[in-house]
Image (tube, rainbow, N blue to C red; front, side, top):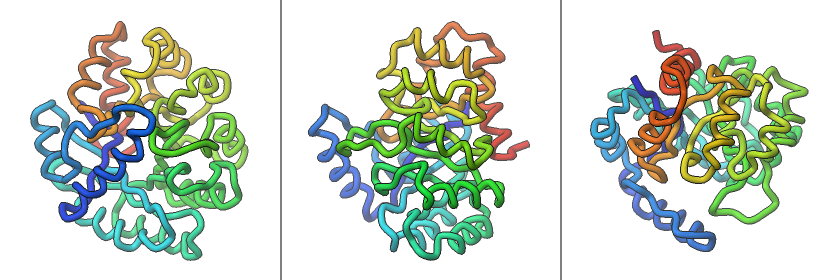
Amino acid sequence: MIIDFHTHIFPDKMAERTIAVLEENASKRGNFRAAIPATLDALLASMEKNGIDCSVVLPIATNTRQSTTINAFAQTVNNTRGVFSFGSLHPMQEDWESVLYDIKEKGLRGIKLHPEYQQFYIDSPESIRILQKCEELDLITVLHAGNDVGTDPPVHCMPKRLKNALEYVKGDKIIAGHFGGWRAWDEVESCLVGTPVYFDTAYTVDHIDREQFLRIIKTHGSKKIVYASDSPWESQGHAAEVIGSMPLTKDEKDDIFYRNAKKLLKIY
């Protein structure tokens, strides 16, 4: 079984345009291209092709007015043929607390926050109150952590700042995307390894030294790593093949590919 904990889709009418804008932003820093169209149908086809049993969709509210529309779309997608959608909100919107209650009521299992696109520091008061409320509501919080190919410095969710935030929350419902902090993995090792936070593997396998990748799994523990591709930006099959070929035990691979995700999503 394989559960991909980090994917993105958009409504059909806006998917192509949105991906084009994101690719243009990323082109300033390299040749970053989507592997598949960012639609529900394309994700379902990718899952079937690559042997992915479940995918978690992570929408992002990039301004204070988007959460209602985004979470309504998330509700329509949720529980569609192995697809689970999270919700989102912007930390600066005034009705943030009622939005979280609404996300819970809609049956969505968590939220996605993107400190770079949303322009907030993960250890800011606005962020801390959301992390605390999510913990209270038993909602998972997936974070974009570390650098992003489409945005300029400063980076708003570096491992040191996330460690600061852990002074206020337990952290066992937080997933730090991109292996704790994209292209900040030395700092991940010094600040986040050993904490209760989960790491996902989204858009990581081709960008990190394999020795460091394995070391982090061993030192942080396979029970706090979840498989993720960041589809459409990385092929679901490629990421799974690379991790499957690594010198990990069957138990470690099972933890990463599905056991931890099932526990977090409460799939029994």
